[in-house]
Length: 165
Image 1 (tube, rainbow, N blue to C red):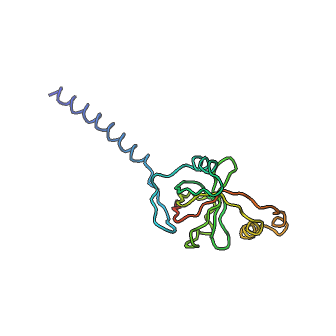
Image 2 (image 1 turned 45 degrees about the vertical axis):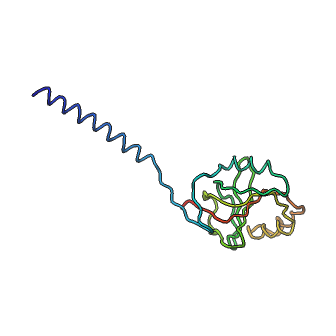
């Protein structure tokens, strides 16, 4: 009888450790919820921002590639949400616009994590466009007037975006 009690106690203790271990595993899995903009896309199989930067560096003018990547929003258009600048690491960014002006991002989306799907390419942004974007950002006239040269930029025409809630 004493041996049976010892076996039961050992089994209860072992079960407790196993059960606690499983709870910790379940707690460590964090479910992420997204807000969806544009076409419906999934969160799986996306590139990191550094992998996306590598893809951009390999592009030549006129090249276009289909991509899906995750990054953080550095800036979003403060007038309509019609564009955003995403972090690519090491002070590099990509300018994301939305296919056919079909959707917009929330004006307060700065610093949010997103997954973007679309076409990546190199773009020449004219002085007039750069000044327009600067105006959308709310920069001063003095800062806007400092923009005097076209800029070659990494660009994405997005058809869908997921933003972490």
